[in-house]
Amino acid sequence: MTQEAPFLWDRKMQQRLTRGEAAALGELYDRFASLVHGLAHRVLNDEAAADRITREVFATVWENPGTYDPRRGSLRSWIADLTRREAVGLLRLTEAERARTGGGTAEDVEEKVRQASAAARADYIRSSMPASLRAALELAYFQRRDYRQAALDLGVTADEARRRLRLGLQLLSTAGAGPVPAPPVHRRAL
Image 1 (cartoon, helix red, strand yellow):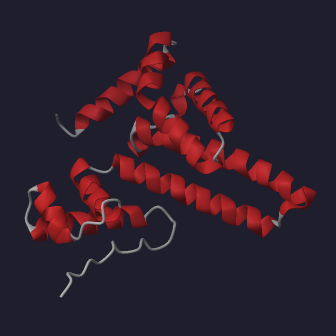
Image 2: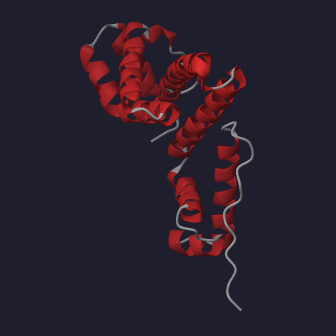
């Protein structure tokens, strides 16, 4: 599959939505609903609110397919960005109301919004990165493997495992959550 194939699908999907094909919306929902719900839940930490955001995002896509610009990125990225904006907007409203009723300051609200937004972006980046990079990061962080152990598990050289970890960390660092900590160092017992 060429690099152009996903964008071709995106453009055709946009055309179908613009024509009002309900089947296109169903196909889009099947493909991206778990992404939308997961990102919304990551920001809001509320199942009902994530359900609401999911409905709102797909309604927005259905009503305004022309606002997607394929030159700016993939349809998946556009939908993820819509989700993040809707979820952050709802979080900002609910947290501001909580602050007004004695639950914190405006600065607290903005810090919570920043952290939730960065965490959702990091989740999206991790889920969108190539499988080889994601596998290396998951081995290092979740299974506590060092790069040599990760190399063995992945069936690659130690240099390749280090390269994959470095690239994965560089991608995650763009999430806006500040520097990504290095994976744990495992020392052999002497």
